[in-house]
Image (tube, rainbow, N blue to C red; front, side, top):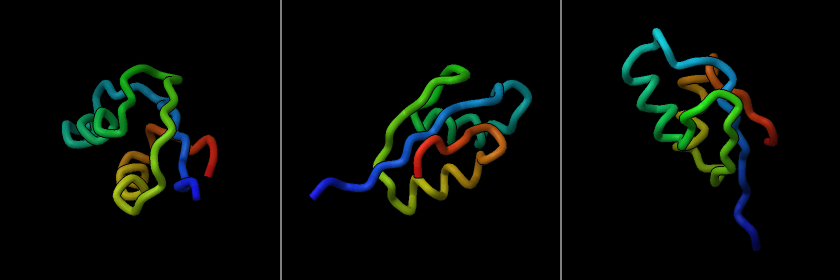
Length: 61
């Protein structure tokens, strides 16, 4: 059985944001605007997405 995944996209610049928020975005594997990553849907990843929800968007649930 395949593990559930979530696709996230960086939609805003990290310039001027808090250092821990920049580290969270990098932890999600996002470096450039409009870059997308497909990640395993775990509570840890969901928490990271919620923390920087103003910088990223969930492309697929």
